[in-house]
Image (tube, rainbow, N blue to C red):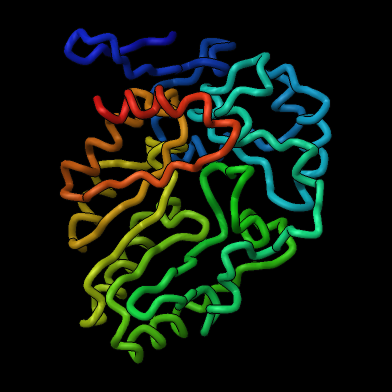
Length: 294
C-alpha cells in the first residue's frame, strides 16, 4: 500500500511505495523488506524480471539484451518501485533501465571522460589535485546508473577491471603528506559490510595528515535500508566526515530515504547533493528546487 506523510500541512509529501511491485502473493515480510542484504540479493537484474513488471519499449528491450557488454543491469526493489509501469520516458526509469542508445558511438566518445586513469599513481587511487585524492574502493553499486562516467570499470562487465591495491594506496597516502582530503567512491563504499567499512575508515584516520574523509554515494537513495543506526555509529567515529548523496528527482525522496538521511544528519554527518543534470531530468528541475526548500 502506498502511504504518505505530509509535513506541516503544506502539501509537500514523503511517500512510501511499499510493497509496490512486490505486492503479489501476500507481499514481502517487513523484516525482509527492511533488510539491506535482502534488497541487494533480490535486485532486478534480468529481462524476464523487467517484463514481469514493466511494459518495455523496443529501445529498452534491446538495451537490456546488450547491457551485459558495458554496464550491468541491477535495480534494488526499493528503487524499482519508483518506476512507472508504462512510461519508458520517465526520468527515474531512464536512470536505471538500459536503452539501445547506450550502444551508439561517436568520434567524440571517451572511455574515461573524466581523465582519471592518467592520474592514477597506484591502482584505484586518483591523485589529480595536490591536496586531495579519489579512492576507488569497489566497482560495485546498489543499483547502476545508466549515465555512469565510470561504466568502463563499474559493475564487472565493462571494458576494464578495477584492481584497487589497498595496501599500496595506504603506503602512497602515508608518503604524500600534502594529501589532506580523501573521497571514497567507486562503485559505492556503503555496500561494504560494517566491519569492512570500519577497518577502511580506521586505516585512513591513522594517517596523521589526512584531515577530511568524504564518501560519494547513492546508497541512501537506492538502498535506504543500509543506513542503520549501527552504520551511523561507525561513521560518527571518524569525524570530520562528509557525505555527498545523489538525488536526481523529487520522487526519489521517499519516507524511507527521509529517515535514512535524518539518521545520517543526526550522526553529525554533513550532507551534500551531487544531482545529475541531463535532458531527461530537466522537466523536474523546478519541482526539485521546491522540494529542496522544504
